[in-house]
Image 1 (cartoon, rainbow, N blue to C red):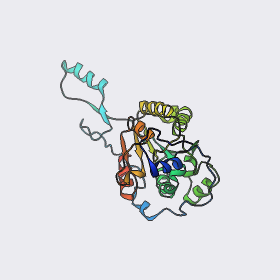
Image 2 (tube, rainbow, N blue to C red):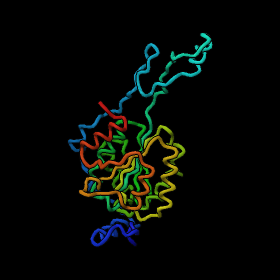
Image 3 (cartoon, helix red, strand yellow):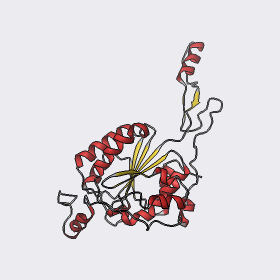
Image 4 (cartoon, rainbow, N blue to C red):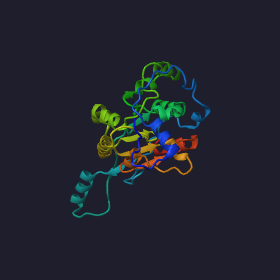
Length: 270
């Protein structure tokens, strides 16, 4: 398998690392390696997602979810015979905005699996509108497993997927996700969270088209890349250069403090 970044941006030793990371290798089944209990830092994360909007009082907007009720406002203007700034506000329909997590569990992300697993488990347990999908050279829905009590979730995941430590064909996985789940889960309210280091051996044109479709239908796309904490890091891999065109934010998510900030951006807070 050739180097993931064929444009010559990586040389020497880094190229050798790239060959090891960017492959289409098959994954395997694991039966150990995930933390047996949530780590202490997980307790710092909010247990439930908060509704940051508040009720409208006396026609004054009280939160981001409030919007103008134009039919009522125009009827008021018609009764008065003129239009002015006296708008009638309403609260937008309630309900949690969906969050879709696409989690890279390929070989290059193997060392981060014990780190991100308890965090994603906490997200799913905190809100029913969070959906987690693992990908490598394939795709698998992990949401149902992560909705169980922690110990049961571990036992369910062990042996249930052979994607652990696989290669990465990101475009194929995202294309499959959009085809199988996009109609149900993608909307202008959906936040897509991609957790990946960006090493990819797939077809860049497929990745670009998959992200274009996703970005066109989602509210926003966030990308978490633990390699961003590396000194001198720049998003130079082919996949990351493509991703920069369609993502609204990139962060490392490589410390409890950073994951707390990610949770706040996703709408979780005390």
